[in-house]
Image 1 (cartoon, rainbow, N blue to C red):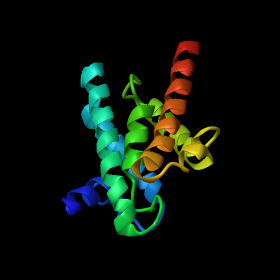
Image 2 (image 1 turned 120 degrees about the vertical axis):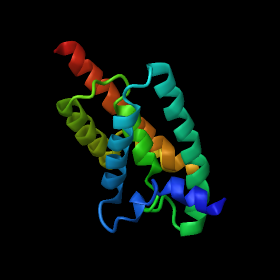
Image 3 (image 1 turned 30 degrees about the horizontal axis):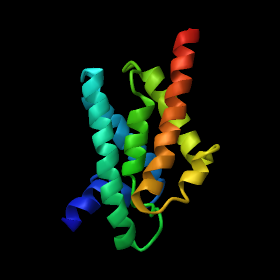
Length: 148
């Protein structure tokens, strides 16, 4: 069971990238979006919510195993955060690139109240700030789509 938790928490090993593991994890989200993009939106939403809770479960234990709060090896939060970013966004490269860049910016900058989410213990603290970054990104992209 421990190996499964580590596999999930590290985004199937993407988190072991020696540099920019969060960015690599987000690219894992792009790959999953490619496969999930044709799901009906309710099923997509259920899938992302399920991945969020799996991520909480796995990263909670992975944090203990790696002996570091929000270890860089844990990237399931970036994977899920990106999937939130592109909810109901078309699979077109300008939109995907915009989502990727905005999500990474929000994940790094952590505007209010995202930084406060990191204070929460274990898996919930790991996952919530990226969920928020994904929600901010998604909102901006939808506002741009409406404006255009």
